[in-house]
Image 1 (tube, rainbow, N blue to C red):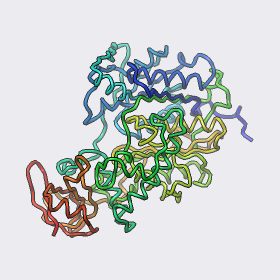
Image 2 (cartoon, rainbow, N blue to C red; image 1 turned 60 degrees about the horizontal axis):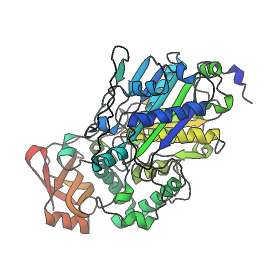
Image 3 (cartoon, helix red, strand yellow; image 1 turned 30 degrees about the vertical axis):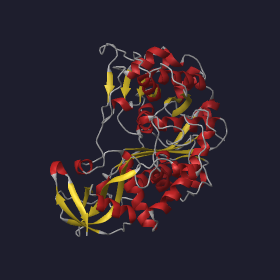
Image 4 (spheres, one colour; image 1 turned 135 degrees about the horizontal axis):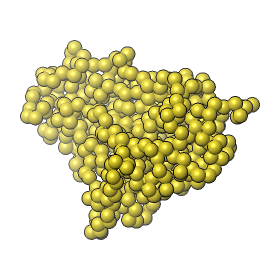
Length: 505
């Protein structure tokens, strides 16, 4: 039995979670949705005087403030955490605006748990939201809501973490890898090669897995898209490339917000938050992989596996102890690579999501894993499970986070815990700038209007160096649409602006 009175005051705990969704258009800005989710989290926590006790508010970076994204035409807050603070009546000392990446909510949770354990913070509100559907519907209707908010930087000092590191190479970008789905298709095609599956066979495997996520989304009251799709319906949607249809990728046209309240045990006692509301951190880890072209095996992320190993090792638990699972689900390979490493089935026989996944629950920008964590906290508190695993991903299976959570106290001293892994011990490949020949490691056929118009290959030289090249020549594109083999030879010429132009030998 746990002696709750002997728990150190510095122990970090999650005490509240909130989510909001708007399926019909409103004039609400993203920060309005974040504030609504935050109020839900405070109410969920219980106790009294919580808003006044918050010393830190951290907001997940909006898509419209992320690299490569168009700014919102209706303006923005110049201090998103201050917008939330003003809306909920909080007066924190610290205002933090996170970096780009779906790992961000869990990475900030790791950071702030350490800070709480060291006595540097006491009550932290993590929140974020997207109102992309509101924005797009207003643009179509010719409306112009004013989402601008301005704050005095002297009174509200903002710790803006910026975009963070890029996780693509200029060679990749110069050769047609412009959207995440093209990169992830390279990962999935490498998986198909490894499993000796044709593209059609691999698509069918992915669709069965994704249909199981869709079933969860259909029953989730916070899902943006509450429709269960069959594997056939997923496959029948408009092709985006040779592997993915429109129903196989994250959907960003959402109005969704989520929030978590993290505090110390001492603060929870002081604020009267019931013990029945406390959720403990069992094991957490994070790390950054090499760029996709540089990974020794592009069909998976060795860093993702190492992060899982560290989180489980810290927790003293195994996958058999986990009954609630949310694996980050921007694309099928993100789910399948993690599930297979953990020896979990990918045929839909076990739920691998708590939300329904980014293609069906909603791809709330960089903030999706805040929803996963909110679901984990709520379901643990409701007794729907005893131990939860949540994974998060940023970039191209680049930035990884994993957390194990339970209603029972853990054994980790978070003030000293080594949660960050470095990639130095992982194998990698050099990138060659001007190859003349190589062999295909993976490929993607990018589509326009449902038809393939560009072929992009990830290839390697005889010495094992990697490169990305492309072709828009119809004979090459059509030949690859008919059949491609792993190891198939290609010849390469250097083009303009860093392009490498390949042809099949």
